[in-house]
Image (spheres, one colour):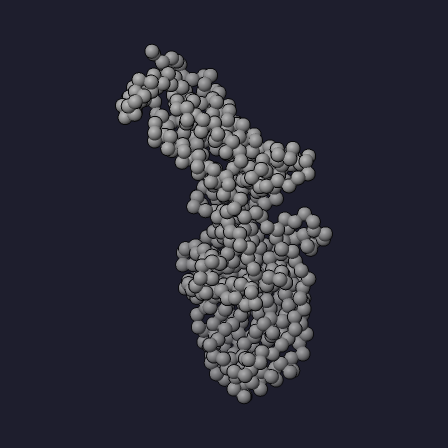
Length: 575
């Protein structure tokens, strides 16, 4: 019995730590940035680069710049899923807006622009991606961020690709073919024609550049930062890891690599038979932390009168599970779905996410979908739960004998433990049998918690009445009379209706089960519903709804077992 006391004490202490540590360790949802006005690009000459060249090469570059009157074109991106702008100067992908997703902020004036989620486009925190050529031979003139490309098309859409060209006037003609599908993948095909009289060596380069001042808050619930599926393994290379090392390199064949946020992803998907050196870099400039994910392909030699072309796919968009799985099959890339942080219970979390999405499609409401999935889980666990509740009833029946043994061996704990064990064997009772439903339900609870907290499908999903977002806690609180008193409460006092229902259902379950024979243990058990009420009040409301409904179903099942237990089970304990 001393061991049981210690276990209960440890469980109680952990619950308290979770309760008061939750608001410190888990960050609150941050509104997604809005799209600012497009910035006009200008063409400039890099003097440091010109100085590094020979006089003859420098003269060639200056001639190109002086005679380059190519107008800068704004290429509009317009598909069913995204919109944005690409400038023909530099060809950076730095202006992408998601049409189907609104910001968390409710005070957006223009829903068509500022109300939509922007992946790129924040002037204060520069974030962009690019693809092109790199060479260790500095005499080769390559297009850079100031290059003005030639093109005729001003619109990029599903049925309207863009072709841009640039001649370095020194033997190389560059072509960039850009196409886009109806979702979130931009396909970039770069071609080089060597019309000069000497061979050149190039490497294909992709870059994701992000500079911003991150919040000091951190989260243990989901992963955000640089990552990639490299050489058959998911690599989560956190911002902190890069800051410590300045640069982390990986060689990989195929795979994918990029930067993820909670709901959004920017990632390059190269040809799966290509080999790349992927570098995760960090630098500090003007108090801005700069993070880059750069890839360099194999060295390619282009002989005179020949040409080469390479294709990369750039994903810029929302981490929709069905969309990620679709690209995994379409592009032949493995485990693109791992851009979503499913956690250690991947084999349970992903099917659960699909099941909830399917239930939502059938019922038209994610909250009802949660109730349906909860009911299905309960039905699947019904046989085991039935045996557990019968075991709990048997524990009730032998409680008088246990109490008698406690009085008899009050001063001999070892003998008491032996006698109680013998009693369990004689009565054929498993003392932990009643705990099995909770033990089995725990992985399901954690998996559902991950789904509700990190999956995009739960974002802004409403239930009924005051529950407008199942991924957020219940917004009401009993301490301000559910909003009637206009006061701002601290996070740990935000106790809504659903957490109260959950606590009450947990208390009712305790009343229906066997009472602990130890008074101290009984008192501690009574406190647990209060602790869990406070703790669950800070969790996503969808999770609280699941747990409450699960408790209600357990209460009904336990009532049935109590009333219609097997006739073969002993009704009374012999004295």
